[in-house]
Image 1 (cartoon, helix red, strand yellow):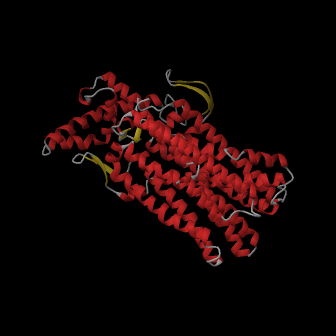
Image 2 (spheres, rainbow, N blue to C red):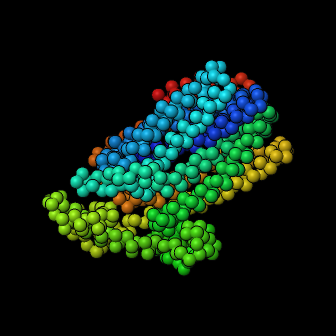
Image 3 (cartoon, rainbow, N blue to C red):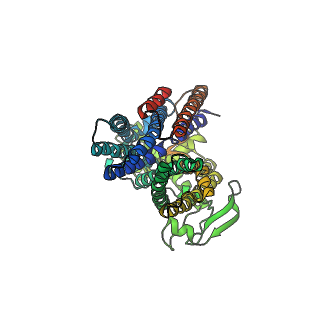
Length: 518
């Protein structure tokens, strides 16, 4: 593996590991606010005890999330130096704001949540809990604004004088439709994760005949909240697909393994065996019209196929060569007005010319075969995207059915009468994490071969360092993160086994998690 593959593997592993903690933090923070709101309005101490118990688990998870998130940001400087140089003016701003949100706003209120029970009034402490939930969501918002810009680089332009991307409209970056769609979709997935966690642990208590009061109340809250969140994930996921069709059509075509553009509205392939070498999908099982209705929200618009998109990208590579040639002329003579005019007309395709760097050191002299190879480089790995998306969607449907069933039982006060369903809840505990990780793979794998879609290829973004250095740090991360995972599971399992009757103080558990992370 070369330095590009190793750097991608390292960042992918650390990012996906970090995201084991993020969705649970998002979901539990809102559930804590709901439970404490009931305590404040009713005055029943059982709801306060529930908030403290689930808050202890939240604190352990939050500490691990902070510890694993820090290393990701350092990698931009160590493994992705050219990326940081090329787009740092744009990408750095939301990342810096997120740091302020996570380490100052969110962390401050998390501390008040644990230490303020005896020092704040009920309403004041509820306000703190709500700020914890708000801070968690705002932290996710800025990360997803940064990631959304990588998917749809609006509000920025390439400056030929500095050879970097620079912000031209920060409001456009902030209100990027891709970022907004990703935010609500990702946060809703986090809510599903938190709800499933509470549902599964509570079901475990009911099966063991322990902590019945906490379990039934927790399951009632989790079932209703989880049902609303699961429905939101489906609706907001549809919005993500619609926005992707506006600016990432190759991703949509790869996810659907649609090689050829079909008459509108396109059919949705439920099952098939994508063959990337043969440029076909074998044994397809399709639902007529469905893909066209989902992606274009019409019956008259086509969904472009991979082959047609490659042909379009071939034209963009050729246009990018013109931009690259005029850029060289401008670098030699900044007063060359003709070159500046030509560059302005073709600069939007400059990134496509950079794809040729993989095939030739002289972009201007690229051959037709090299241009064709660069155009085909814009096709991501189809089969993994195809199946990841369908497993994710299948799990989403399952969550809706399970939460709906538990909500109906909770409404009828029959949660304990169907023990087989309680066992299903316990077994379903890891499924939201699987769905979330698959969702991130679809989002990031579908963007390849770009780090910044249409602007900067991934293979040009890495640092100029030996592959052996990345191998050493990768091994270190695997060992370190494995140790953190063991600590996380030990603390979570010990807290769940103790239950709410005699839990260790929340601050002690959170402090233990932080010491382990250090």
